[in-house]
Every structure is written in structure tokens, then in C-alpha cells.
Amino acid sequence: MSVEKSEIKYHEFSSELQLPSIIHLIENDLSEPYTVYTYRYFIHNWPNLCFLASDGDQHVGVIICKVDRHKDRIRGYIGMLAVAKTHRKMSIGTNLVKKAVQAMKELNADEIVLETEYTNQGALGLYQGLGFIKDKRLYRYYLNGIDAFRLKLFCKTMSEHSNSDNFNRNINNIDNRNSNSNIK
Image (tube, rainbow, N blue to C red; front, side, top):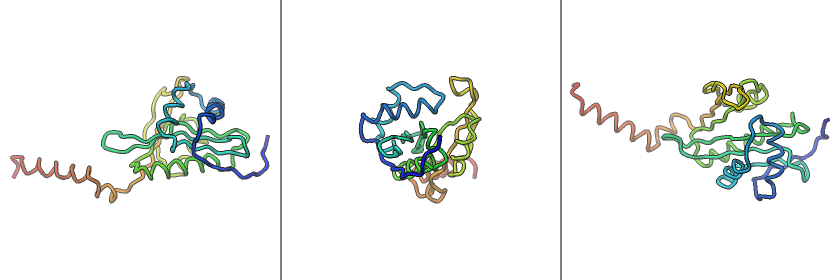
């Protein structure tokens, strides 16, 4: 079933009323079962990082993300991405990821990570085409026993990190250790 070329609109999550269509999109596409609490965890804490694609009054794509601290970094995370089968090959997934990445960069994300099934060539191609790299393989990661790849996008260059407080603090710690050592 193909869809005539139409104008897809992109917008942030704005209402709990959108939740049933978000759940429907994700349940049809992703192998993991999620409870309503998982969706609410993301969209209530990071509503500005949940984007929808609409064709008229129908939601045809969704991306759900978050940003929080991970060790000494600010890490963005793409939790879920789904596009209706009827609307694939229209760059909707790519556009949703671009919007989410831009929003996470605006929140100072140092990196963005996600997991995808290692057999999902479509997802791997989409993310790698946007600059994500394979970080590690996670064996039997999904409930169905399938392995995953963790993909990572670095948002800042080394020169940007060199100006950060963390970098300067680490350099100072190294300098202090060297000056306090017995090695002359």
C-alpha cells in the first residue's frame, strides 16, 4: 500500500491525548513490549524531546528521547523511533532523528546513544547515515533473544571539550598528581 506524496508536519508532543497513537505506532514497529508507564516516563519528563510526524490528522511517525547525566557527560538517548509502514521511504524517520538530535544538542548533549537490533539494516543505515557509529554489541539484549548494537553520536569536538570545566579539572588533577609524586 503506497501513500500519495503529501505534506508531513513535524511537531513536539503536546497532549496526553496523543499517547494512544504513539503507543499504536511503536507497538506495530518495535519488538520490545513497553508499558504505558514507560511512555509516560519519557513524555512527561522530556516532552520537548518527543516529536511526532503527522499526515493530516493521522500520526505516522514518532521519536521519544531523553537527556540526562551519564558519568561526567550529558547524554542524549533515543528510546524509541517508529514510522508507519505506509509512510516509509519518505525520510520521516531521518527527519525525526534530525529534529531530536538538534533538540538534544541545544540541551548541551555531549553524545547521543541508542540501541537497535543488530539485524535491523534499515535502522543501522539510517543512523549511520546521520553520523552514528557502532559503539558495542550487546548480546541477547532484547527479550526475544536478539542482539543489539549500541550506536553513538558524538555531539562535541575535542576542542569544545577542552574548554569545559570537566576537562580543566581533569588536567589540574593530573598536574597535581605529577607534582606530588616522587618522580622528579
